Length: 363
Image (cartoon, rainbow, N blue to C red; front, top):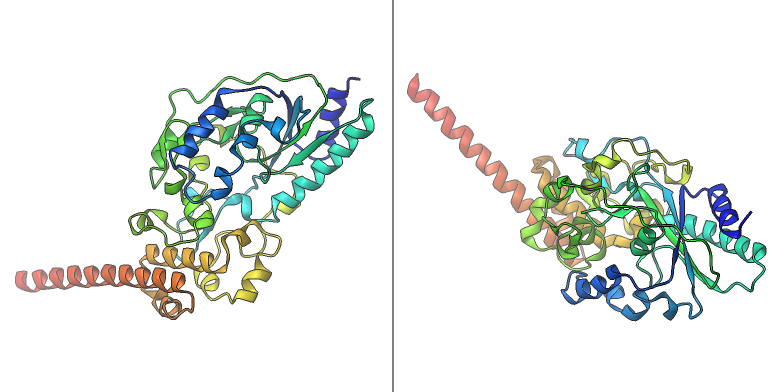
């Protein structure tokens, strides 16, 4: 059995659902990455604008690199989509963040796979492995390793597995057997572009992160632009809409990893309960969870916006508490939410008053 085949079999045994191998060579998508950053589409994600030479050339990470082993692990669980959620008193946390932090889970498996490669190889193995943290454009690696094609929403799509999977890779000096990229099968479908509430997908395959709800609720540390708040709905952390509407996800398989199942209270969480979390309760609730990335004040900011978008007067008391919060970021968004609910209530009262008056005149 070839080393390549052994590696793939071991990857599957470790729990990876997809594995492919790409050669280390220049590809056009990495040139586009530079253009994307220069256009400002990375927003305030400074880590994406640093080490561009490394991100576009893995030999700057591993000088003797010849191959990249790309691995993918499904995280979809058997729960309804965000597009099916209709309770305004509940928020939405992105599907990938319902369970434990995927970085920890995939890094452990990649470490085991890397040890296996070193044990099985007749050569001295040099390499590095990453899970969405190193100076590597994971999706480009995945494409050229045959994991899938770039969807118009910029996610990697696989014909059998859909797009609900995490990516990780091992960069190595070994020369292995390479997989071929798969053809683009998005065709004329534009559902992801049409469904995006903030029009963040500027055109097929081009995402402006500054407009993306995932960026706004996770990466942005400042105030959310007022003109985008109405379109954010009930999102507290991340967004799944462009994947929810993708036809390739309609029959995508579910995860076999228990750690990706929703923790208690994180599937469609109660907004009032989330708003009243203390900083210690936030840390405990989201310990070893991706949600901790938003930080306490960022999370409360998002909760306030979701409450405002519910337009439910029931949230006014808790929003008034948040308006007095010691963090100005939280207080400002709570005030915005209060004003929005009051405007809605006033408009409703005015309409009701007008209709009542008309009925009296008719009688």
